Length: 223
Image (cartoon, rainbow, N blue to C red; front, top):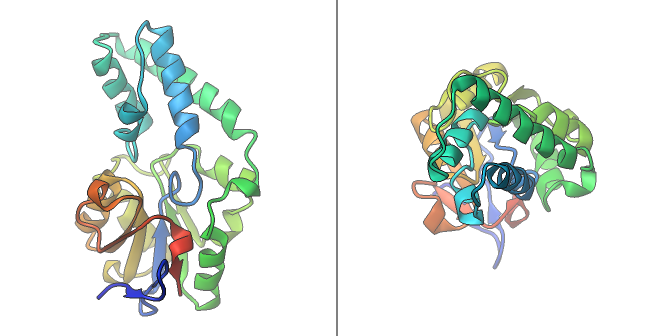
């Protein structure tokens, strides 16, 4: 059994794992609302609306692929140069919101779990599709919590392809079987499984099929 019940709300993580790999958005910080606001603003500028339900489908998906989904939902066909311009515009709007982030924006339980892992000698890495990961880590003062950071700037294939997690394991010099992933998106769950890693889903079980265990948040986990 991957996790064991610790109390009514907490579950104990296995201590035999040598590395923990964390997704960023929705796991360590909640920037989903920032993405939603920026994508909605872009959709509205193109003459159609964008819902929170659609935003949920973009979790773990690269910026360019997210734009393709958005344009498809709005039945908008554009040349590649215009798509690049729109992706950059959306990112600028998103970064305006990220600029106001502080360490108070780190989700409950994240700092505690990261420090507990370090205290037990468990290596830690960030494995995120976000190309703004380093900026968010700096604003939230979490950069020092990781031994390696693999983000959207250092991979060529986005989740559900396992590249980001395989690169993280390689950077940590830890076998994939000794890595435990923390993910809030179905694409991320599938990427972890494809990488040969066990995975803890953060969110609702119905939305995270295939995870070894699903909990509402990192605050519900203990070492």
